[in-house]
Structure formats: C-alpha cells, structure tokens
Amino acid sequence: KRYILVQSIRHNVISQPFSHPEISEEMDNMSKLEIAERVRGMTDNVWVRFDKVARETDPVNCGSGRPDLAPPDFMVGALKESISELNTLHQYTREFGHPRLVKALARMYSRLVGREIDAEEEVVITVGAQQALYCAIFGMVNPGDEVIVIEPFFDGYETITQIAEGVPVYIPLRLPQAKDGKNVSSADWVLDPKELESKFNEKTKMIVLNTPHNPTGKVFSRQELEVIANLCKKHDVICLSDEVYEWLVFGGAEHVRICECSGECEKFQVPSNRIPWQQGAAQQNLPYESKHTRWQDHYALTNMKYPKITISVI
Image (cartoon, rainbow, N blue to C red; front, side):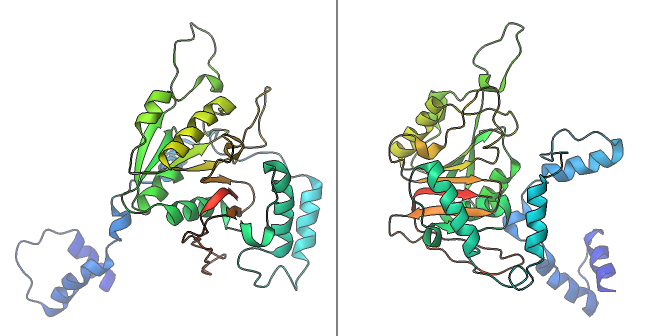
C-alpha cells in the first residue's frame, strides 16, 4: 500500500495541498526515501548502459578483461586444497590479511621493488581492486581536492573521486602527429608534458596513473614516468598507479614501476589489480593509520600512515 501510494505521488503533478492525513504524512516523509546527495548527480555506470544494449543486440564482448583460457592446474589444485581447510579458510582471519598471504606478498614484492617490505606493518589485504582504489582515494582526497585522470580511463577512477567529493581533472593521451597511413600502436599515444604540467596547481592532491594502460594497451616508458614523478615531487602530489596488467606486456615493451623513478620517489601509491592487497611503507607519522571495519567480505576504509612508497595490489 505504501509503495503504491509513494509511486502515485511521484508520478502525478500536485497542484493543491493535500488534506488527507495519510497522504500528507507520506509527502512529509518522501525526502527520507531519496537517494543520498553524494551520488544523486552521478551518471549511469558505463557498464550498466552497455549491458542494456547488449541484451538488445547480442554482440560479441571484446571489451571485458575476461580471458577464455582455463586457469593453470596448479592454481585450481591449490584452490581446492584451501577450500578443504575448514578450520582456517572458513573462519574470521586477521583483519589486515591472513599472515601466510601477507608474508608471501611481502617476499615477492621485496624483490620486485628492491627494498625489504615488512609484511606485518606494510601489507593490507583488500576485497578486490575497486576497494584498494576506493581506500587509497578516500584515505587521501579531501572535498575539493583535484585528482588528475588520464583519458581514456577505467571508469572507477572518476566515480570514486566524485563520491569522495574530489574534483576530477582530465588530460587526454594524444597522437602527436599523423601516421601517414601507417598503423598506429599503443606507444604512439602520449601525454603532452606542457599540458600535463598545466593541470597541476595548489588544489591538486593526486594523479591516477594506469600502466599498462586500459584500454589502449600503452606501456608508459621510463622517460614518461620520470616526467610524472618529477611533477609529483615538485607539486607535492600523490601518484596512484594502477598496474593491473603488469605481467601482460608484449612486443619488447618494458613495464617500469613508478616507484623505480626519480630516486626515492616519496609519496607514491601503486595499486595493481591482481590479488587483493595493499602495501605501504609507513615512513612519516601523518594521520594515515590502518583502520578496518568488517562489512560484507572484510570491507575496509583504510587509513594508512603516509607512504614513502605505497603499493596496493588487487
């Protein structure tokens, strides 16, 4: 009854005030049923739109990162073995991540980034890539802060920034010159250094980097990363680097991590979307300490100590 009444109120133009007490009460309470203002102005998710179109046209999906190859046997076997460990896997675990997992990740990435990572203090497990991005942006971006986003981009960067009440600032990858009929490769798309520098100002808090890049496949060169790193150091800006496709590099290209550039490279956050974890070196005593709240699958809003080099891997 209440649903029908509210729907009737929403879809009819009311020209005179109501005198019926039940209808008047429903009108007074309508505001409580509205969507929160922080998300009301957001546009539809692009995947929601594509899903609706796909149901009408039955296309072949060439855009989703969904390999059609089966996982290797050793991975399937390890998963089966883990599921059978009833006394460990199906219980609450350490909120920041299972000890065996964080230690394995710390060992692996200590070799990759060239410094010792403390598994107990510097690695946090998250629920997928979106949560690592969410935690990194919410943990650092205040209302009104500007976040530079490189176009084209994974739509989550923009959405999460807007929910955090940050302001996305866009800069496109460009083709510097015509190819004269030659094939264009992902490497041909570049950032204009002067245009990039013009996006940095006193309100800039973060730049989101994605390399290898989705959707172009571009692998940012060391020289390109040096430009970004130097601008971040000059303007005291965080670089949030999403390196989900770190291991999918072909044709002689080299994946270079942003934390390998410009000496110490302080203030870098690097989330890669593979297995859910977030690693951060707590070097400065700023109010960014790890705090987790259990919600669904260990949903967490993470406040970590300000990182010297922070890597979030999902």
